[in-house]
View 1 (cartoon, rainbow, N blue to C red):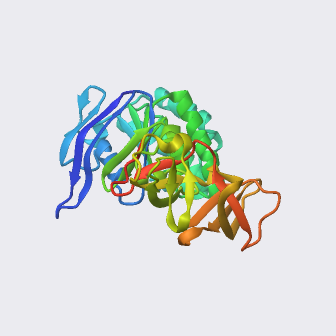
View 2: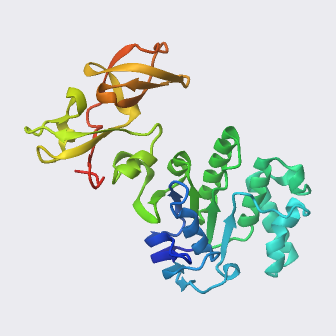
View 3: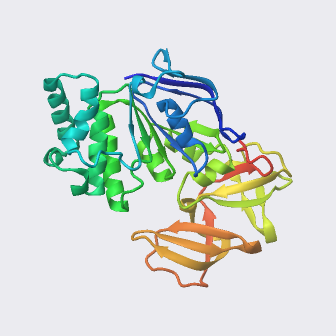
Length: 356
């Protein structure tokens, strides 16, 4: 295992497209780091630069104590798991697992031992004699994980490895991947556009936009204290409710459109009176209150014990609330909802930066 260090890493393609901009990260030995963001944000490009599949335009990448900027991918001591599994279709699972070990000159007894151990850890013993075409997507994904695992690399790199699985299998495989990392504790960098995957898998989460790192931190810290409006909308589902307005002159309340007023209480965080701000509140943090905002139900999405309720508010505002309800409310029903104390977020409207 090894730590990874990226210092001012840039990627500029011919023609001037700036895919990654000055990214610096320190990834501890044994850490599971997740890169998350929308398509085109630079997360996969950054991963491919760590792997050596993309040349870096400037900066430095270290794996352990070694600078690997000019080191070939095969000599970086990393193992990569791809979205499309990249298994050899004409080879059995055993042969797929064994292939890279043969190339490295690993003796047969050691190859057999590693394959047996990886198969046991991943529960694929019965698949070893099958070819990829005889396996389900989930089984192929396990074999792809096994192929990386048998190499005992310094680091694992995962490029959206679960995106081709259905929702139930993705959830199951995600848990298996987390348990596998707990056991082997190999340094891992994982790319996804799925914020739920990022929150559940990562020791830390890196949120990216337009090639820039927006925030780095433990999942709950990023969820509870998003550094800017972009992070606030990317992390958390359903997305955070956002309302533009200003702080009242007495500093104690937020004023939005059409007379919408919300007391700030402990959420004022020293923001100066009269300042234009964007207020955020997560759907999970709205609750029924006699003194709350009057909102009209538009659409409901029952989820079992909880219901996502989309509502119309003053000034044409849209709100979403995730509520525990005995019955699904009818469209047009009026509800009064208020944020739970201590759950409001304030951002500068112009810059988007978190306040307080």
